Length: 392
Image (cartoon, rainbow, N blue to C red; front, side, top):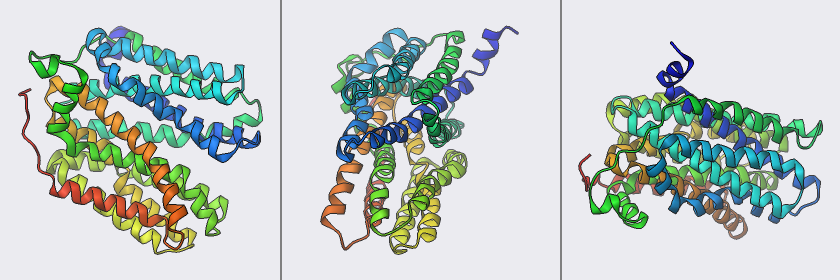
């Protein structure tokens, strides 16, 4: 068996490895650049604004991402995304400038989106219905593990400021190089005005059949960005030690890592909607419990861990749910919209969280998460599974 044949036989695991390295890069960049800017005396407001470049890049490129995927296929799109990311990572040490680094983060947002969009569509298009939840949960787990490991490499900045960027670029190159051995493939295309029409037409058709599934990516984006950017501010205000804050946030990710695959498999057996309701309802109660803990850091940590066990899977559950509802011909658009809703949630979280902290000083910030997840629970519970517009 040749190397090419072996790699193609295990294509799914190659894609999983690639997205785990992508998650590692994102997980490292957020605290790394924030730390560098903080040491250089950059204001927290400007620091936070610079961090939004990743999500802005995703939103900017989303409307035009589907056409090259349909025309050139999965492999070239993944390779192009890798070139963007690796080139940007290697460029960070060349010139330290807030504007220049903002542009580089835009490039990484574009490259990562090309990667995730292509790999998600490839996995959802080729997975059997019986194994879809399992495969997507493994996919989501790999991103989560990479994201959790990334911050551990931030201390390399004390050896040489550009070292973490170089290490990340090298790991990305090693992972992306495996893509060259894969045989190219294209998304399924069907005749029809909706499928062959413009992005807006396809997006409307996809939202019509799968809107309920996009609540998962939107919710996870909101939670992830809010927890990482605004919770530390709240925690320090209620006198929780910084050392405990650095443990509480990863506790949420750890909970999600443990239950990601079990919940995915469960959704294959009993359906996506019941498991999504379990995830949203359980996490809403957990964050409500954390709000009642006051400044008890250990209690909040435990509740964050429990909240992560439920809510840590809502992104991958949303992708699986979308794949169930969407015809294969519209799967590229569906996966694209998952990324868009995730980015909207990621941009909304810190803005709404900051406003809540300023306006509701007498109410625990954590009630915002409980209320938000409760609203998503009600919307999912009341939402009906729409019928497909196009037969797959």
